Amino acid sequence: MVAAVSTAVVFGLLAWFVASSPFWPRIQATYFSAEDMRLSFPRVLRGFWLNMRIFLVGEVAILVLALLVAVARSLTGPVAAPLRIAAVVFIDLLRGVPSLLLILLFGFGIPALQLPGVSRSSLLWGSVALILSYSAYTAEVYRSGMIAVHGSQRAAAKALGLSQWQALRYAVIPQAVRNVTPALLNGVVSLQKDVVLLSVIGAREAVREAQIYTASTFNYSSYVVAALLFLLASVPLARFTDWYSRRDEQRRLQRAF
Amino acid sequence: MVPRIEMDRLTKYYGATLVLDQVDLAVADREVVALIGTSGSGKSTLLRCVARLVDYDHGAIRLDGVALEGELPERELRKRIGIVFQSFNLFPHLSVLDNITLAPRKVHGQPRGQAEERARELLELFGMSEHAASYPERLSGGQQQRVAIVRAMATDPDVLLLDEVTAALDPELIGGVLDVIRDLKQRGMTMLIVTHEMGFARDVADRVAFLDEGRICEISPPSQLFAEPEHPRTKQFLQRIIESGRL
Figure: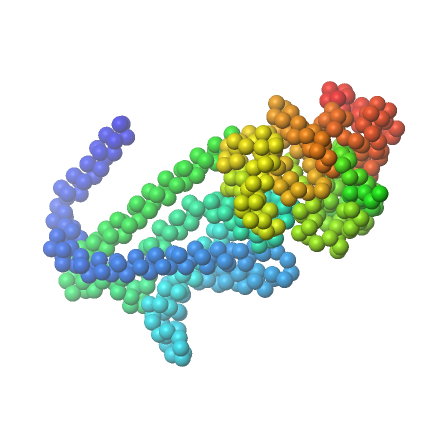
């Protein structure tokens, strides 16, 4: 109750201060022009739909690929050494290079090679670059979750006769995923926005469309439209992440006592 | 007669530290042997060697005369030797029933129906039927440990290894677990038990072995070992136990 009142007072004062400023009409015309918002909305929304499609397909690919890389990195024994080394190289390289640079290298570079039988779609290769970059990060998230599963769980699995692979599949990975779900959700929120990076290779996604509109009108309301669309998608996701983390924490506390 | 489990000059180092020093021990079919001794005397390591959770450096372990290393296929070994741990080590993301049926189904290829039927029989036997669908975190430590025993029994092993299975339990929960072990003895289970519960060792074991610095100092029926220990280290150990009021 007190929180609600104090929040209302603070934000009310802030809004009053901004709206009463002598620059407000200029701010409104530049950022919140209803006419420009209305005119730019269809194309920005069309662009945003592309963002969403790349985001959804990319996220699924990332969650799967990253898990494979994390498993490869966690394998023990001399036979698995090449896989282990490949996973480390994958993570080091793709996590060490800025995503934007990877997108340029893949999105412009691979189509320019004009290899027979290889797609020349910049959008495709740019998306692949984004997926690889995120997979490297996400693999480390998975791995931290796997390390957090106590060694006694592996001992129990081994004593029951589960192979190394079965122990991962039935004992370690389910617990690891549960351990890192809040961190994974955080990555989902982040990817949803980073799809915007693909605009540098000419993908006509939301920000690109907003930019095109701005270029001919010198009005920035189209950017605000794009920002609102992103918020519409990411805020519920963020709240869901909060809710899940809290529930997860409570569950752990219950187990501890 | 060939012993069920036989250790032949079993030797194990952790780095440069000798933890098992040429241990010879034979456990007959249906026999219960308790291993007692101070922490670090090698009791748990011995059990872990028999369960093939750690490698040993010299010597051999045989199950019905067949060496565990090289002669007995891994899968058969895991089926015939069960182990229960101090900290239960149940899989927290699986229900009680799934914990019990995981190995029978995934390792030994039993159909789900058959594995679950057997699991329910065992749960019934140990008075745990109503917990089949529960998750481990919802159970008390004593109940979890009984589930862990059922899980180890699910493949009908020939030998059960118990590694300080009551050490992590509150005193009032120990009794239920010990009752289960007594029951298993009644049914003729061959067991090798590492324990700090001297009263229990005296009640349930056919023979008690006192380990000290990786060697079996003394092994004899409990009536003899607890009443008239021969080795000075055994006397000293039991004296301390009596002084602390645990016997």
